[in-house]
Length: 267
Image (cartoon, rainbow, N blue to C red; front, side, top):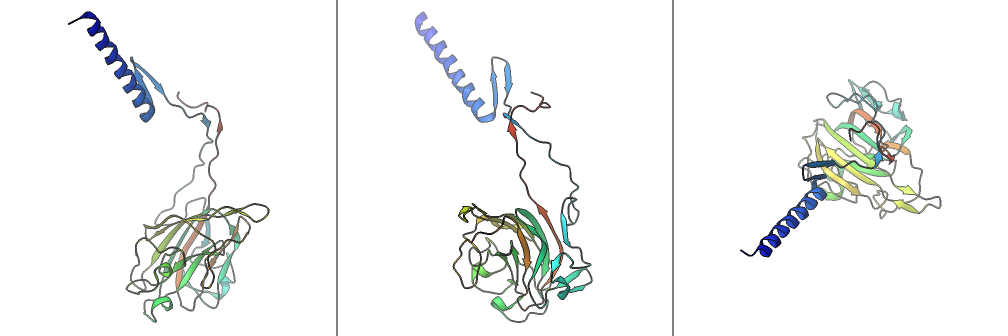
């Protein structure tokens, strides 16, 4: 073999190894070349995440605001008109709003439609959870009960059906866990960012970061109208004695970092 050919082959091999090392470093965050390992460190200083105690059996975590613990409805305006029984409350007479306003949040709420089936379609176990007073996640007995799909249980009303029907039988307790991002408006009332909803029905994802096209309505096309960044939570009375229990909410605020290097980082 000619010496120049051998040298060329060695150079090509070294070049291939070098390119492969660069490729791996760009994809896995490690540079392992000639025995040296360089750790990737994000150029951000993060605050320490606060410590909380998680709840048990769907109970509230330590940083949650309890809206109904089975005893009284004092967190709701007009809540005294709903009937508290044995750890749950029965919807009655009219809608009720929380006295406190909320924006971005995590909501847990449990509900049960009447065990005795009366009516069909929208007339069967109908209620609703209204985020920020204006955006409804439908409550309905959709167990063996056909209706328009963007109005069935766990739908974003008149905007998006649930991806699956996870309804339990009438009378059985069900749960919603809702991750809510409220819309943002500028000072002139122009929409800057739409609302988003992620909904778990009985532990099953049925709305996955769905982008709302506006307020939900039975008679109007969805549209946005400027409102504050925090609004009350509303529970609907739609003529059916739907029961509720274990209602709690957590306000959500993202952790914000700043440019720099964390002093406790091992790198």
